[in-house]
Image 1: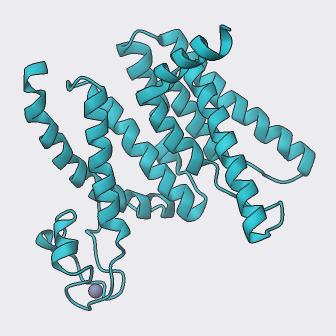
Image 2 (image 1 turned 45 degrees about the vertical axis):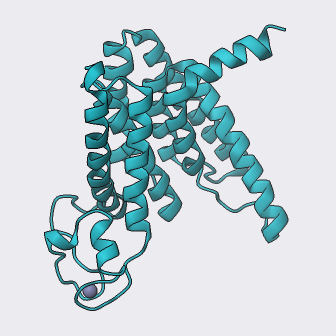
Length: 260
Ligand SMILES: [Zn+2]
């Protein structure tokens, strides 16, 4: 397949645009318990169904000037932005992994991480339908196909288990929920795909990033110490990067931090 990669890569980027369009639908409908198949997309204001030629990723939005064809209501630029971002992420994945059938697992993981980032940002919610199937699918990829089944199982335990413990401790101490079960299931999924070392690194880096943003918000917005920043907004993007670069991070850590 190596010789064909330059041919398949642009194709994968086009697929990315279309998948991004589908992700926009998932991000809106899944947390609201709606079907992602029916009904077809419609304008939220005039309720008119969006014709297939008005639903071409990015292009339709540009041609229609970012407005509904019928009622001229503005359509958020986030829709084409998510489509372009998905295409770019597909490109990034195709540069890091050999382009063969196994890359579909990595692309699936990429899509779920992006969708979770958005639903958690919008509604502080990580739908089970996004995270839970990722646990067995991640085991199939990292555990069975890559032959790292012990690492994958330990990853599920390390990711899900440690966040579960933190959530439980916080609840006992503060008598209210600090971390949702959604984060626990997301971390278990990431552990299945990444293995135990990378998932620990992801938890550590996400806590660091979350902590820094939290401090910045307190300093600049003078909010109280008990507002919620959805943790998945940090976990999912860092978890995505870890599948691409986690081994490099760990090698770097072992080389320059531990062995001195
Ligand atoms: Zn409309």
